[in-house]
Image 1 (cartoon, helix red, strand yellow):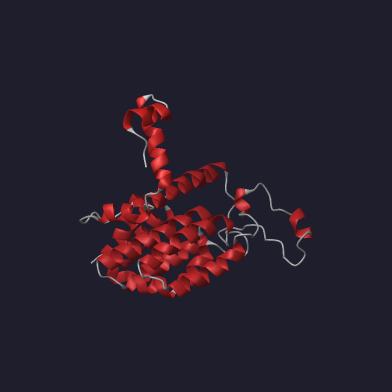
Image 2 (cartoon, helix red, strand yellow):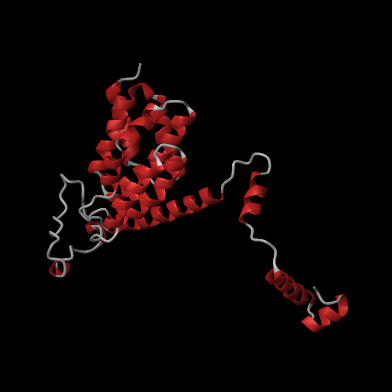
Length: 251
């Protein structure tokens, strides 16, 4: 039997070193499922790292949660799913805090919630409630690590808002250096690419891809006939009048 302390330390290390790639998230998810008998302890690791690490890492952990839930359902270890569902508000608050420090992660959470709803981890009502809370955070002050200094001048135009406290090591809101900012840009690009791939993905069974294209294609109309006529003339190097004379005018 594996030593619980060693399992926890290795899982924590995987969470800390997550990046935006699918392989990185899947590796950590497989590790969690392998030691599913320690599910509560591993879940506490997820919450702990969400609340203590920088915003880049929190975004990566949020996307890891999608992979974990999907794999847990496939392997029928639903305790992970139940705990994510129970603590989803705490998770979202950690990834995109309401104090303005998580403004950079609001879009990350918005893009991830539909996947959790699709997996039936969250209900549509819960997702709608989370979206409502994120709407206010989206206009919050930018992440302090992504700007050279806190916006002191902005406080005069919004007297009701208290200035965001300077980041401290204990709060986990450490200021990002140039390398971390560049890493965030690259990881956002990777996440965006992955979302586009998911948007186009189909199961591959039978005629799923053909059905998807059929459903998304508009009805054939007069505009399509005109476009086809123009493209044919261009391809053959003829004017429209010459095309009509050669083949007859299209109805």
